[in-house]
Length: 99
Image (cartoon, rainbow, N blue to C red; front, side, top):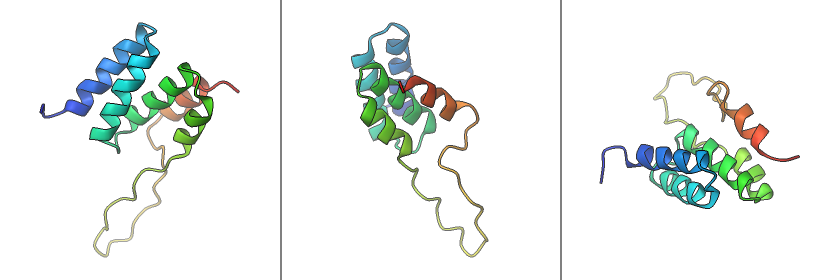
């Protein structure tokens, strides 16, 4: 296994997306997500893939899936964590879903 196999699969899925090979892109995105379910860019790509293959309801549900809670800070006061804190990507995913 490569040190960042999830990242490799994410990039392969991205290439398939650019080639309009949406089923292959979705498969790579799902494989990447299984390897690293907390990587936001993989989650966003999966939403886009689901929308592109016409699975709009699953794409909407995937947009609403929360990230796992952060680890216990060990007595420190935790800050609020937004599920989509990475700038620009939630909007990109939302635009990919037909209304």
